[in-house]
Length: 439
Image (cartoon, rainbow, N blue to C red; front, side, top):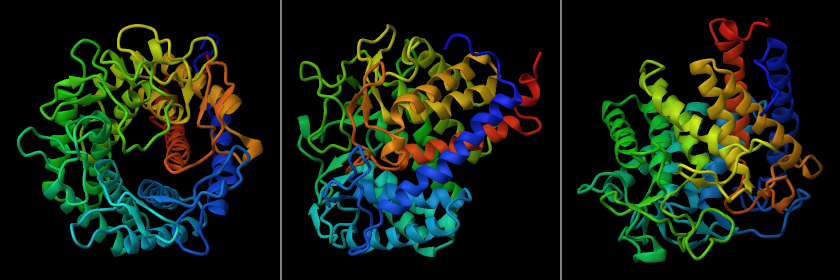
């Protein structure tokens, strides 16, 4: 991060031009051309490091619903020349036809290529994205099926997932919504991750409905995140909790939606560990929620500053750039591998902090991650998607470009949001008009 001065308009124009060209000419085409399943509908999302299909055809609900979000959000942002809307419509209909449980309500977790359910669990993480993606789809296209599906998902969540005793949401359940077994099955735990994504989902849901009840639910979720799920010492997030929000050392659940490195000593995340990516993601999603709620832009500024400052201090590699996966809340980390999704979230969060405070260090943090990402993680030879994981210096540890959990969601969303924020910085009254003039 050394040697990067306060940016000029030319500096920002250069990155903005790069981001637009990469998104429109490389990243979106990767997904538009490769992912649609012409024979069965929905999306196929298993690609090796060369961008070639692996032959795997299992369709997780998460991959289908996140592809719906990707295509809807890209269309809503003005990309794809109508093709993204077509694919969003196709994906929405595949999901509605195959994943809804008519007997118990809610979404099945995994189906085969034809759409036949092969894992009928009810996973809270997926239901967050059911609300989120279908709301985005309706806002992007006006299709009433999107709103109906988002509202149907919200009803299932409020009926079956809300913890009326302790607050928040239950997360891992059987087909009939009974909590899963305790321990590795996760039926006795809650997490910051799912509550953060529920905030994200409720933000777009409320943007769609503007219903006061949905506003209250969003505010309740924000209050819970900030009052019960952050550390009192560092202000960063814990991973997992008991039902009544006592922090626990995190475990990897039997039902997974990620492909992290193997845990050390059987414990995925010690109690004193925190995720730099989740912290900064929470910060920028909170800032977006504040905007949709109509609050003053500085309402949650202290949270944004705290999360981004912590990431600058401990999470961003001062020598090689990029964001580490996780580390102690108040000390440097020894876990120096770098995963794809943290890079995307920190890019957005650092620009939000720069827009709020106009301080050079946030721009330097953004540039550090941007440069590392395009030097080491964006695989242009394989079509332009991001590698799953690299080591500290950028050597590939997991070269997969996509699978059942890693798809377009973080990469495409990050580029859309980065472009939006760089445009805000350049606009009259943006941060650039105040602090970016060459001296």
